[in-house]
Image (cartoon, rainbow, N blue to C red; front, side, top):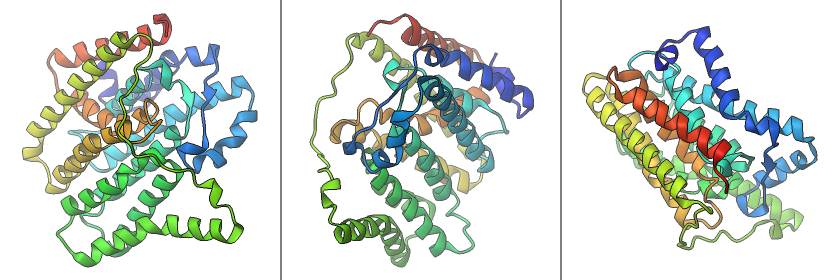
Length: 323
């Protein structure tokens, strides 16, 4: 079954569409809720019109967003040559992860933040050989700052951005200041606008307080899902390590950035109030990259095991489990 997605072909895209509708078919029966609140960030004011859209249109919009995010992630991986050969396995992995928890079957700012996050990772990886590095670094910082303003649980991306610059490029203090200015630019203009219009009350306090994540009614299913996903990601990380010895240094550095992003984004779940579980969408991006790589770069029985385990969990959690 995985072999269908190991080639970059129209047939693979067709099967991706089938998998996407198959995993999210329940969304066509019961329309996803539009779950937005001011505490999530300024995406709230952009997405507020979605509250007035009809249920069936919301269902189609949700499936379309998920599918386009999967293709966008796959595009990034192939353009950056992060895979042994071009394939659609990262998109497949993202679709699997997106259907892993019923609580994620919602229209949320985290979905739209995923789009920005993918472009942030793409921009970071292209800094290595940027013809005009300061312009590229400023634009990279601008994307990070914009994402943090629009979706508050993505604030760890600010730290990730500095790690990415340290990994991708040699240390240059001027470039670090350019990155800082890029990150601060969206907040600067937003603060100026709110000050001039007297709307500072639109800035809710961001509570960065440690909290214990509360699991749903059946935590065992969620824990099993997390364990299977964690093992699949670890398998992908080890696969990348074995592959990294024979690739360009730019690709190795990019994989290091992805790993840092994967580890640091976990903090969003514990230190930013209300981030769990929707901020898991951000974690899905680097996680799907590693799982997709392992799917494409392994010819033993492990890909089939994880493929059917993830598929079984998707079906059970979405259709049979009662939360």
